[in-house]
Length: 137
Image (cartoon, rainbow, N blue to C red):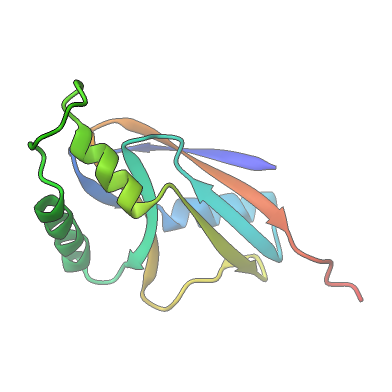
């Protein structure tokens, strides 16, 4: 089973916290134990887990990525978004997250992020449900 989330980004580059949306999808599916595969079908938007409590972490991640992969450079890709493709490959396009007792298993400070590198756009995020072993013995 799977569920598709729709996310509207506001800027060319941003980290959008989608933790609550993924948890809501898990709750709607009534997945008790197992895992979810959270993935982006886009070549210029990735998925990651990082700190969700301090907004400076998102800012620092974007600043570092911009320094490592500037928007303009010796790129041949004609669409003008080569940096977005590289940043997405660096972040990755999917995560496998455990689910226990109907809840995502994340650390105290962790959040799930859609990493936008070529927005603003409406993005899709796919959540695939992987059922765990039965609780019955």
